[in-house]
Image 1 (cartoon, rainbow, N blue to C red):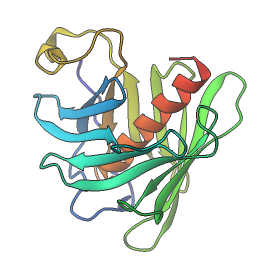
Image 2 (image 1 turned 120 degrees about the vertical axis):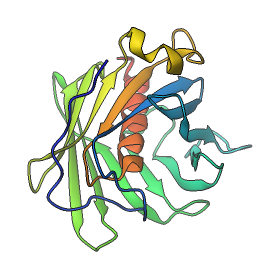
Image 3 (image 1 turned 60 degrees about the horizontal axis):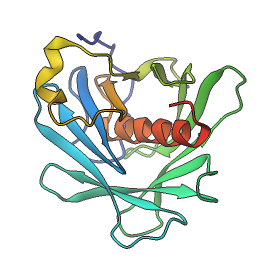
Image 4 (image 1 turned 135 degrees about the vertical axis):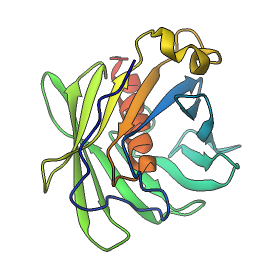
Length: 204
């Protein structure tokens, strides 16, 4: 499955240094139970998402790690378990927020918003819109109208057999495409957020 090339965004959309895409990049996000593996299309591990050991369900925290196992950020839900529609990207092992993700009302489509401040100090709103099942979600920079990323539910494709070897049957798998100038870690966080919300609503 070849991913379409996306236009560069007018300004860098990043909250983590040295992680901005220089060209259109596509990653494969594989659900592994309560964990996620994020790989390149060649099967190289780029990130992993694991629950914090010993954490109770309330405000469940997940660690998002790089390929070397270093924690890049934590992902937490805000509110009651299994009912929360707001999640946050926070500093590792703390409550300092980098980005807040919140579901928006929509009768027939998935809609959510991510708010954060870039490393250059610019406030940004990213709008997620697409069908409820997550088959196709566009992430758009509200100020410029530019597509910053795209999240698509994986459909079987022979060209991706290498990265599908470890995918668990019955689990959710996504292709996350990132525009030049965007921090891929942001798009991964938004993909995980969409998966969590769809799991709660039963639309996965």
